[in-house]
Image 1 (cartoon, rainbow, N blue to C red):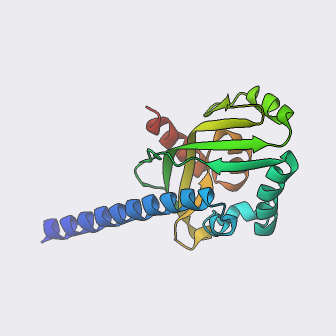
Image 2: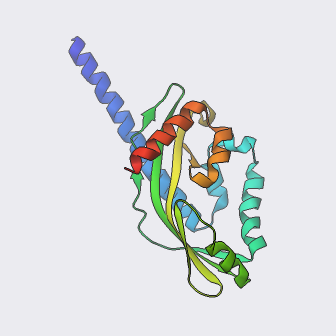
Image 3: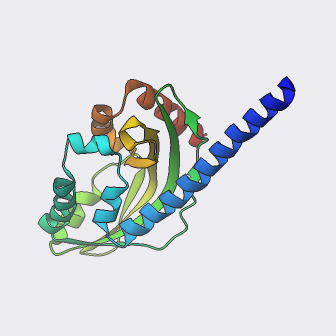
Length: 191
């Protein structure tokens, strides 16, 4: 009887993790689609709520629009295979996390050609910048998205960019345990 009970508990836990993986994969694909469609409001709704301690939802939306407008840029997300790879769901003391790694390619066109020249000189760890013309460039590479389920998310999955460029922000909103575990998941995904 004890063995049967233990087997049932293990099966239910395995089933919960499998369902989490399905949900996370669906949400990742949905967020990427929202990004390509520039539906910032829907992306913000799926964002890890602790981020809003640093920047309100309205500021986040305005900032995303403002950066492109101030640079005189238009962005087109290329429809390329995501090559999505998910880490296993990791249960922590006060949260569950999962890290997703995917490919993204963006064509940016600028009114001012000097912006292209300036950006092609920028070195990025996970992205490659390629000049396509006088006013156009492609930024392509690997992106990371962290799925988090904890008390702040009311035990639902919410998401946060987890690229090197966002490390300072992530350090302000993530617990040390989540930061350490996320770094381990990222290292494992890249091996």
